[in-house]
Length: 197
Ligand code: HEM
Ligand code: HEM
Image 1 (tube, helix red, strand yellow):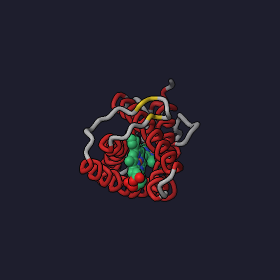
Image 2 (image 1 turned 90 degrees about the vertical axis):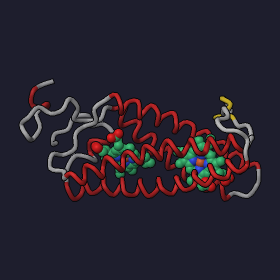
Image 3 (image 1 turned 30 degrees about the vertical axis):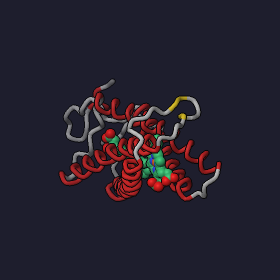
Image 4 (image 1 turned 45 degrees about the vertical axis):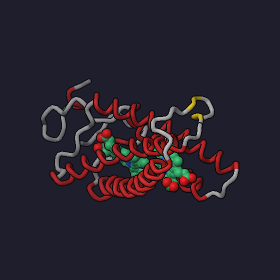
């Protein structure tokens, strides 16, 4: 790497990372896509009348949800072992804090959603297989009350996630359209180098 790509607007050497790696971007957009699918599947399935179709929709919901959990765990492992690109120098402190807090809550929701669904399913006592391949292990005892509580937690988390994603998308658009920095562009596929910081 050559010096100018390592120097930011302050003239100081930039932190070792100024971009998201291809893997980090892939994980971000794959998880975003699968979560969108999950929210639709969840609500369609829950409102479907009792039928084999409902059961099929649930199997998809549970399977895709298990995949989301796996990808989010991988993503967190990546994130905790790599430096994220630094935020624009002129970003005020409250915005940095808001970004940190909202990303933290997004990670909490992304983990707690599949886990609460898994607890509710285990507590129902019914056996399912992930993509009809891997039996879903039980992580909770068969218990009607627990099933209802976990189900309610799951629903509330689903609503919370939608609110967080709405704020997240609004913030991304604000970076791009109002502040005109590279925060949105650097998360898009295909660009690993950033001309502006
Ligand atoms: C990111 C992952 C997930 C998201 C965003 C998500 C979202 C949703 C939503 C929006 C609903 C409909 C609202 C409700 O009735 O609660 C729902 C229902 C449900 N989900 Fe999930 N879910 C996820 C993962 C999972 C997983 C992994 C499981 C099971 C292992 C699961 C089990 C359930 C169950 C049991 C219901 C209630 C179904 C019913 O009432 O008929 N979910 N989910
Ligand atoms: C289910 C949907 C989504 C979830 C759960 C999600 C979650 C996250 C999380 C947790 C981060 C923080 C990354 C980290 O520092 O580890 C992040 C970063 C980011 N997300 Fe999303 N995201 C979603 C959808 C979107 C959408 C639709 C957009 C664009 C309109 C977007 C734009 C961004 C951008 C630009 C960043 C990078 C911020 C930075 O450079 O510091 N995300 N996302």
